[in-house]
Length: 153
Image 1 (tube, helix red, strand yellow):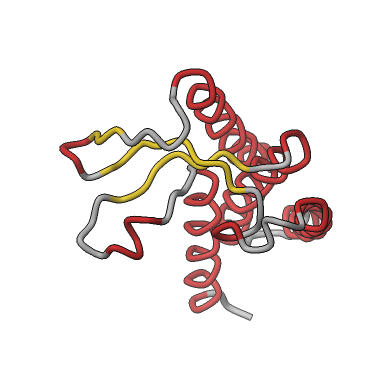
Image 2: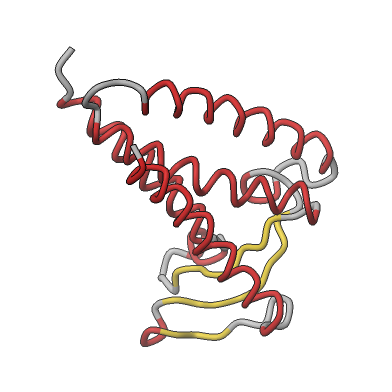
């Protein structure tokens, strides 16, 4: 059980430290290409939910984010207490660590710091700016889906 809690905490701490670095060292929306130009680092503030949806309703987005993170936390504890289910425990650890990090930003700053995008020919994807927590949430959700396909009843 400690391993999974450490995964969640590690996801939170990693993103928290990167966000602090970005906040202190990068200018807003000033792109910098790294990794052979494949990744673009740029500081953006997401004041809403996914891709700034409802950015004019920051308090509502924060409240919903807190409620969803609390609900996820309850499910997480329930799953942690189950015997087995290692894949789901790992997946939820990633999702919860990412969710806590983004929710923390929303509550403390009224925005989430996003800081990288993929330099791709697909313009729609190139415009979307992520943070590591978003990647943890996506990866954790994908692992949970795959786990559910192969899990025995």
